[in-house]
View (tube, rainbow, N blue to C red):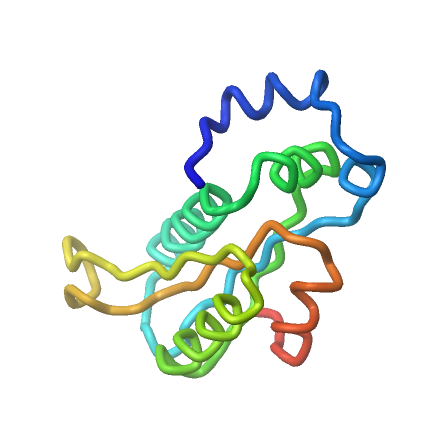
Length: 137
């Protein structure tokens, strides 16, 4: 589901959702492929892409709850692109919003390099069930 982030942010104060959504604990996780050798700037851009793309896959209610709770993001790491694809499959099985970032090869990476996976926002419990064993970047 595509959302307009500006409308969602304005809508937040007027949004009438259940207390479970408004008071819930939400986060987003971005998982980085350590094997994709990226400069710090490239890494930051790829993580930002993953965050925005994944958020756009989430429901308005979840995004509103996440924004209302300081929209936490945690960056984790895996060893390879295949690890990212495995995580993406788990997210899809559990119906957790996610987005994979594949570089277009305009700067320092080859076209088609899988760099990051954005997961959520969703509840902490749901995301931890998928990413709880991963280490911080």
